[in-house]
Image (cartoon, rainbow, N blue to C red; front, top):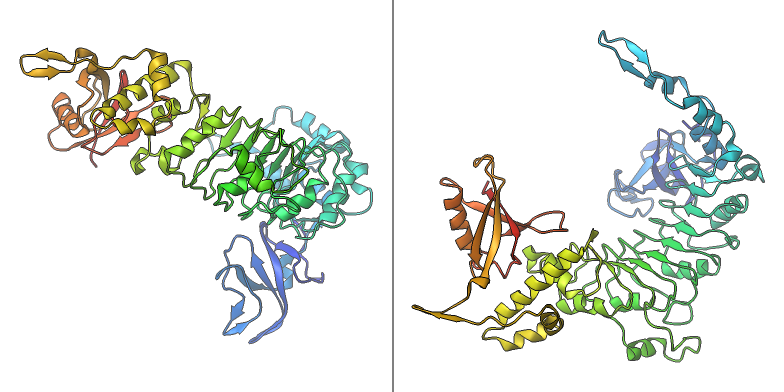
Amino acid sequence: MQSSSDSRTFKLDQRVHSTNDPRRVGTVKYIGPVEGYPGTWVGVDWDNGEAKHDGSLNGIRYFEARSQLSGSFVRTQNLNAGISFIEAFYIRYRDQPTQEDEDEMYVLSASNRRVSVQLVGKEKVQDKLSRLEELTGASLSYLGVSNPGSPNEISNIVPNLKELDLTGNLLSEWKDVGTICEQLPCLVALNLSNNSMSHEIVGLPQLKRIHILVLNNTGINWTQIEVLKDLLPVIEELHLMGNGINAIQTASSSIVHGFDSLRLLNLEENCIVEWNEILKLSQLRSLEELHLNKNNLNHIFYPDHDTINKMVGGDESHDQSCIPFQNLRCLLLGGNDIEDLASVDSLNSFPKLIDIRLSDNPIADPGRGGIPRFVLVARLARVEILNGSEVSTRERKESEIRYVRLVMSKLHGNPDEIKQHPRFVELKNFLGIEDERPSVGTTGPQKMASGLLSVTLKSVAASIGEKPPLTKKLPAATTIGKLKILCETFFKLRSTRPKLFLQEEGSPLPILLDDEMATLMDVGIGNDSTVLVDEES
């Protein structure tokens, strides 16, 4: 696609891609001879980590690669130093299809002949692409863009771009990014993901119109974000996934200031362990969404007045009246290491929080000793979206009833258990649930019929075949082991043991019920629950 770069002069730390594959991108780390091999070689540290060595060959160290197998030596003719912005534009948005494209635009007839395909609206699309000045959105991902090109070239050809995707190119200097943005006066959204950007932010003007900036996998840290902050006066969305960020380093305070318009901050797939680092973001007044999936957080809490005061110390710029996370509506915490109920309960203290993700944390995984969805719904008083699924009015009511009954069953003989359930008394009174009263029969005290649960058993086992679901009334104290024995009888299983799953509303996957000593109430089976009956493989 692009011409090779054998005539170019490479330099250290230059970004390059393989001549035959613009998606194979790396950084030049060495230029010179390699003992035992004639000619000049370029040592490249490849981004994807798929190469041959760590920068040393036959016991001689030439450069330091990021990993043991991310480095290799390449001939100059097999490397490409990139092309200009407009050259990439013409490649991606050329007026006429190539012969290769034409060859692909066919189907095979019954007699194995090629029949040309007429694309609906093809002329209309090509007509629009022939007038590049009308384009408002463009993607130049993985085309080897390394420079902005000649002065004013961009503004003369595509002056009306509003959204631009430059993912996976060879850009590294911020001044080049600035040059591109200055020639695009309408630009509001810019994606620079998978470009290895320089740690020195120089030559970048104020980006006064950029509302969305995506810097995923660019190697940026928060110290650089503090510099960018003053250059992004109207930024609303900032995406910083996969940058190895482990701390929020602020310039002159322990609290992040500025970002007056920032609504969404994406810090997914980083390395943040301490919740105190996240608290540094608590004074961002406009922040509505905070994405923290796939970090290493193990505990969270809502900061009280004293905690914030200790953090700010003698910072005179701190506004004492600012409520922490005062407008935060969405907090995504999936894929962390949270395992304590106190962290879950603390989410009730965030004043406007209604959208929460806790999936893939130990606390939200019953298979790892966590709690089922209905308990999360009941403990989180205001959650409207949990783990990406809407919490309906019906689900909330049923979850809270099941939760109250579950806690009541645990309180018998263990009154201290109530300390673990801060919403229990409130919910019990609100729902009007009375304590169970035993009725005396011939064999002594027994639970009333109201203690029975209506449970639907649905077969999904291949050996059972298609059978209609069975609805049974079962005591809440029935163990999973006992339920398995009952299923063997109900579905006439003889050669294999059943495997049971709880199908919960709002959960994408059913929950395996493998603790045979646990009761139906313990695992969250309530009235009208559905249990899937499979067989051991």
